[in-house]
Length: 133
Image (tube, rainbow, N blue to C red):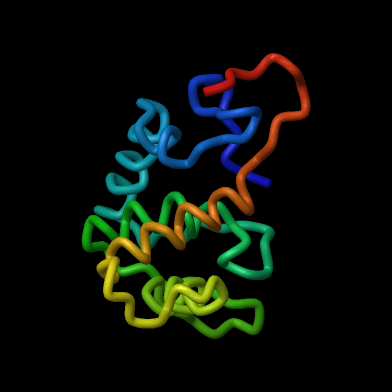
């Protein structure tokens, strides 16, 4: 699994926390580098994962770009494209969070889907030198 960080402050009980990772200077520098590249080139962030929802780039990086208004397309294993919105709708359906809810807004349900799935796919350290929150 990706999104491994050397910064132990990004972990809870040995598992990387995407929300913490997204706030680090290193992550922000990476985002700035991609944005800079987009000024001159068409950019593709690639992964070995067959399913975009299995990749931290979808849950961590694409989320950031999507929330910034940048249109994201995921390349599926057969070569078809899927919008980030469609991928997140698929994720919400798989987590049974796609039904109208009188207690939570759609944005809150999307955030919950990101949180749950990030927990499911996030890197887990196997050493004992981790911070416990």
